[in-house]
Length: 492
Image (cartoon, rainbow, N blue to C red; front, side, top):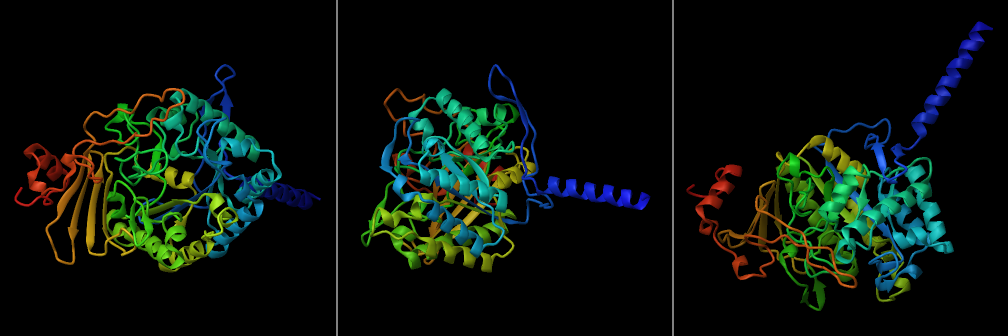
């Protein structure tokens, strides 16, 4: 009898341990009844239970999809662009997720819902939401909120965006249930005040809050940041924090890894009748959908390799990221001349898995929290990149670009590597200088330009942006650069 009782107790203990292990990682928070904001948020491990991972020495891939109703949801009740309800279907969502699992078993992605998509009660949206919750339970996918349509601050006050973030995140938690709380937000662009609000009021410490190099594209500009993770300054979301008092504890992530050569161009160019935009890189619109599967995947893999090969050697870790709007899967329903791009996605995932099999394919929240554990501030950030052109569209095969990015500044050089011409300095953005974001937009207006321009900018828009020899900089700036990179400047 005693043995049977002991065995029974052991089985009960094993059962509860199994149940506890099977629960998805959640954040539990209490709420102040007066403010409605979380008082305290418990940070959970950024990986699934049973996993552990050192940040350095790894390649990371983060992949997100956006579920929305209108192309640009400028506010809760206004929108700009195409109505996309007809190209959001549960069949498309299922096909999309199954393509990822088939080609990368165990991958975890981030699903992002707009305000209108969370509110929509039509059968297709209800079924998509049900499916996505099942993917969270089955695969460990992250589910989060998208304020506006990547451009919340361009159309709304900071106060309004804070309200949208709070209520949108609450709707996500209610949709998933079980006390679920995402570890990140996807926002396109997000102001410093709203990033502060996420960290200090909502307890969320990761945000896709800048679109690196974006200028004269879509509904907003945000050129001037560094392209890998950083803690933003309270002055400007594009500026890395300069010290403890300036630091916002919300890791700011880029949205799409881009081809550094294409990124130089201020406006789209047309080459052989194809639009070559500055956003060309791993995103599907500028590659697979415009260039076709063969050329598009060539460009995607070239951009990926710039980080996973050379970039990995230089930085001792590497990161590639992409957002793929769900509507792109069923795009041919709206435009019969467009392909859905899933063939290209399959090629990319298969080849990435073959060439870099140890890559960690995890959610935005997981990646950002791992980075946050490794880097407590911006002091030791020192990102370096070298990329040669792919030959696709505006990525000139004879050009080579070098980037240096840290807390103090970002610096870029360009040369013709085939003829071995001397490098020209094409960008020197100083982060020690005062920066200021635009005021809130006035009602009915769009404040689109949130860029951080100062000394020399890669887009070449101003007279002072003309490429120069680095020796033409003032002595004080040469000294500033040489302190970070001894030997970079000849004869100094």
